[in-house]
Image (spheres, helix red, strand yellow):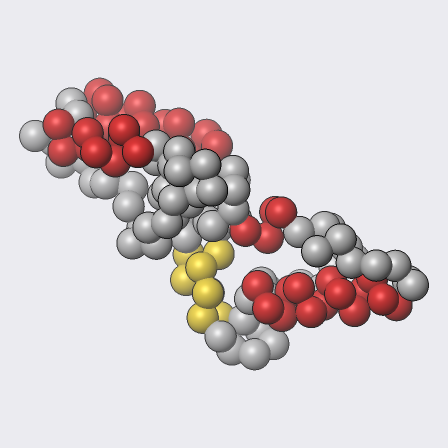
Length: 122
């Protein structure tokens, strides 16, 4: 056994293809075999996870608009943050505001599209 911690962030949910956890981004095999992996195998999993993600995985955040708590950095189909699957628009705030929850961000995007007489793609 090694002292290398599990990448689990307690936001366990499989992606649509049931290939990996959208919380920690490990494959099902990596999850099932973690306790049997050698230190080198665990370090290899961590190296892959760290190289794939520009931000920490599954951080608990509070929405700056409605104060709802939500997970930032996970939940998307490709194992990255759920917000990467939404269209990019103008910055939320000039003051460098933080993340919005899924509902508030979808509402913001919908309004931005409507301001431009466009139909939101979601």
